[in-house]
Amino acid sequence: GNSVTQMEGPVTLSEEAFLTINCTYTATGYPSLFWYVQYPGEGLQLLLKATKADDKGSNKGFEATYRKETTSFHLEKGSVQVSDSAVYFCALSPTGANSKLTFGKGITLSVRP
Amino acid sequence: DTAVSQTPKYLVTQMGNDKSIKCEQNLGHDTMYWYKQDSKKFLKIMFSYNNKELIINETVPNRFSPKSPDKAHLNLHINSLELGDSAVYFCASSQERSGRGELFFGEGSRLTVL
Image (tube, rainbow over all chains, first blue to last red):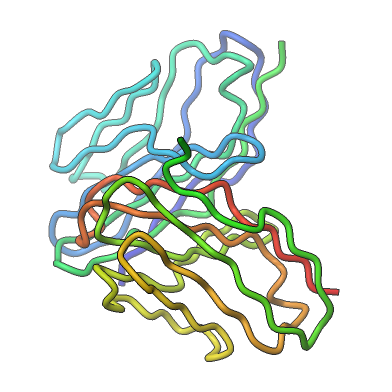
């Protein structure tokens, strides 16, 4: 079946530190890959996505590259801010008309001033 | 205007009661979802409707019954509430039924069963 594995958290960083959050997936075919972010007390919102191998998604200084050879979609940001403190979810959607989005367990990021 | 709105935001009730959560989206999307988020933040899909038709029905107890009166609304009714039903329930919508498009989430409804 399809699955998404995220690195264990939580992660605590100082402001302006470099961020990497690992995500690997298991799926047949060519899934679409996503990062969603959940700020405290809110619902999830799409951060970025990639729909085919070697695509790079980017938004708000965050980037992730779809690596089919390593089945990975790691999230990176060069310099985090306190406002980036949130829960980050990696997700995949396989091909198919009624396919569903499968989420990883989520990882909590705390950025201290 | 809120794109996906859920009511109530908080719900505290006793075991054995029946409760409903309502969801409305004003984005013109055809597909709506219910997700359950447990205390460890793990998200699991429960149901999905496309234009009032049930298209995804995960293995959830039949005490949970979704209803979609029209494509802009998807309600969740829960009978005989149990302690394990305590969670945050998120409604979401998307333009595509394939799951490959962006999902827009509501702010969640926190259900606490005592």
